[in-house]
Amino acid sequence: MKKWLTWVLALSLSLSASLLTAKEPTLKYGPWIQAVTETGFTVLLKTSVDVMAWVEVAPDDGTAFEAEPRQAYCQTVAGRRYCGRMHSIRVSGLEPGTTYRYRIYRQKLEDASNDNAVQYSAAKVVWANNTKTFRMRTFDASARTCKFTMVCDMHQKVDVYKSLLDGVKPDDFDFLLLNGDIVNATRNIDTSIKYTFEPVRHLSANMPVVFARGNHEGRGVDWYKTPEVFPTTTGEFYFTFRQGPCAFVVLDGGEDKPDADVEYAGHARYDAYRSRQLEWLKEAVKDPSFASAPYKICLIHIPALNDKDSWYTQKWLNAHFVPVLNEAGVCLMLSGHHHRYLYREKGDCGNGFPIVVNSNVDRLDVFAEEGKGLDLRFFNTKGEQIRTLHF
Ligand SMILES: [Fe+2]
Image 1 (cartoon, rainbow, N blue to C red):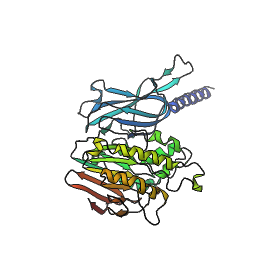
Image 2 (image 1 turned 90 degrees about the vertical axis):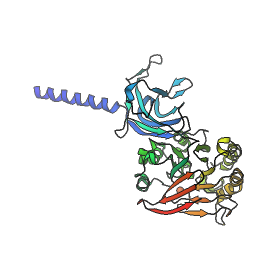
Image 3 (image 1 turned 135 degrees about the vertical axis):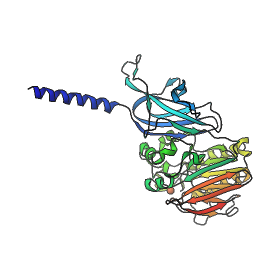
Image 4 (image 1 turned 180 degrees about the horizontal axis):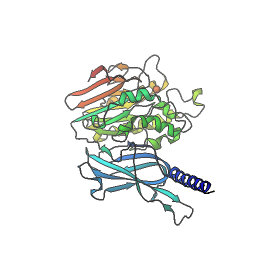
């Protein structure tokens, strides 16, 4: 009898302990960084249960994070703090070209049954991969150089993705550029996050990540949630930014076939979308920060080619975007989409700039310095340099 009681007691204690553990919030995905400017960035993360999260920021000055109260940033919706699982926290008021440390905290939602007395747990720090503190550097238009690394068309091939970027460290580059089709389709938004950010979390939590949407990210039933994962400064998948001598315009070609194609089942309205984007582009390139840059670079998943066998969208982009980019003085277009390396010289198809298309199995590193031009270096999955270009 005594043994039996002991056994029941032990079982109930272990059950209640595991129930408590199960309820303990965990960091499901992230953090990852988006929408970086000279004075701010957005931290994103997904938690296992509903929490109120916030970010605290400290200078990277060697002091203990706990040395003093740190500036805290939280996500609000119409004046009330957000409590949920998909978090997007804007950090602002920073200095250009400066490295900061940040930590993420959370309070679990315990009881929301009384609207007038919602209860949250005590505050705790959120961590990932045994790392409590992350680092981030803001962009700097006055920097002497700009360096970034690009991959595209990973299509959920985690092995390729990891082997291209495992050896890269956040300090090696100003930003990581994901030039589209990192997933096959956004069937489930968690899948999109998992395949886009988790394989490169050592980078995506600690450096700016720039995302140029590929046509495949627009496929799948959860496609409409994609902007939540990749917030931008414009609220669209097209935007500009500046780092040192380089100004960038990121564009979104949408799908690659005509809107009426049977594959789209009547849901495509990309002509109208691209036309609105075109009007935005005409103004965006006049912005002094863009117009004054020594190097103006267009980042777009689908290259604006006009070959005999080019599909509809490429011809559309070539006819409509290229004249505006030419007029604006763009000096390079970087793309993916073809899953193989392609190079088009300036003037080849009405383009006033070279068009470089990266493959789906190589990484492209770009180094720019005012007065010295642009150096492009391609690396395969073994880390071997396979090609260079200079402009
Ligand atoms: Fe692709």
